[in-house]
Image (tube, rainbow, N blue to C red):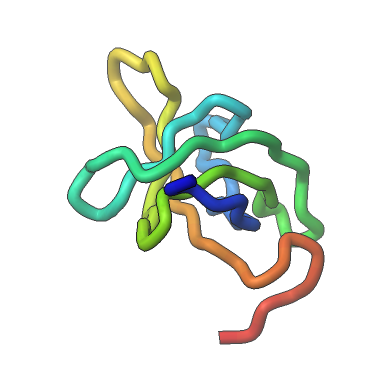
Length: 88
C-alpha cells in the first residue's frame, strides 16, 4: 500500500467561508495530487482537523475540491495526532 492514514490540520476558513470536506484532494507545493481528505471536524482554534490518506513521502501543502472549476485552496499540514496540540 503506497498511502498512509494521516492526521491533518487545515487553515481556518477565509472570509468566503469555504471549509474542507471529505473527498477534497490534497496537493503538494507543485500542485501534484498526494492524497485525499476522508473526514473533517471543527477545531477549538477555528481551524478544522481531519483525517486523510496521503501518499507515502507526500507533503501536502493545500487542499482543493476535487471537481472545482476555480479551486479555492486551503492550507493543510500533517500532524502527529489529530487530537492534541502540536508545538512547532
